[in-house]
Length: 466
Image (tube, rainbow, N blue to C red; front, side, top):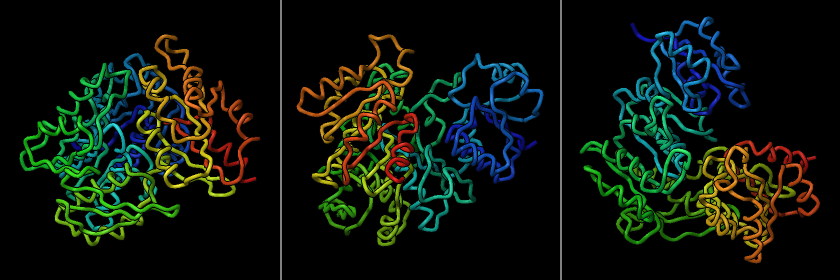
């Protein structure tokens, strides 16, 4: 009997929630549970009439009779609801295994992977192929600004997915992307991250090597030429490899770049031959190469490059990826940056576009890696493009031993030692009391966190729009 009734444990996450909605829209009977629901996912689930139980209780089992339970990676074996499902004998799977079963099936899978840029790239490839008439299925680990949702289940033979290297579930400690049967694989970057599950860079590399090994002989690996670790990993592919990037040796590369406050005009070269110029509203060289990688996918699917030009101009990226929230009287930008490479890229891109305007950086060390001291020294250089740096104390920092925890106080002092203005704080209230009296018209405010950051974006928006 075909599975029709599916329950999601941890349905409030962006990936889980959008996947649940896509299945509901496809005719499956979907229920969900989570510790607590927040907007926007709370409203999205309600609008799609998905019954959700808040709180994890063993009694949830008695209220539902699903044929399959999908368990998210944030839930643990000792979760009372999870224990009840395990004891019930109902079939259960991890989130990525469910994706493979219900979304990939026999489709051509296009996996967008890498330490940085994968959400934007997945959004771009999905949007580009949709605009080119291919109407792909897709699953994005964020909220795209140019698509109706982060997940779609269509009749197309193409599936685009964000290839996350994080683990799948408590019963499946392998990375999610190993479930996604790649035919096309974009590798944008490989660095040490997720210090809670990976020991070092070699450990991270080993996961990506396993992913590359899954590519069939008639597949394609699209590898970032400027990242030496990516090139090492891609060398193990048994299928063709096409390189992209900024460097002269790349098969596909970015040529001449002209930037203004209105956006970027950039040239694309194939084997050092210009194939034209394109325009984008997005920030930074890192986004130019993200766009380029999607173009490589389109060309290798036989789609005409001349039709791509107008689509590039229409693409805005994903929410919380250098998203402009206010333009006057100040410029407020919300960004997901948390790794030092991302922080440096975001602030460098903002500096390049806005020149001499004063740049404020508001940073929350929130991710499992950011709040550890593994990148303490790298963060000192990451803020070079900012004029004033406000660093909040690490999120739930007391959960970590002091010797393992990033010190926002030391970070601020080390940034100061380079002649920059920097200050550490214990709360968003303290940050705002310090910053608001000093912020001037035309200043650029960049908020960086992979989480809520105590709603500092909303508080800044409310203050400057009143």
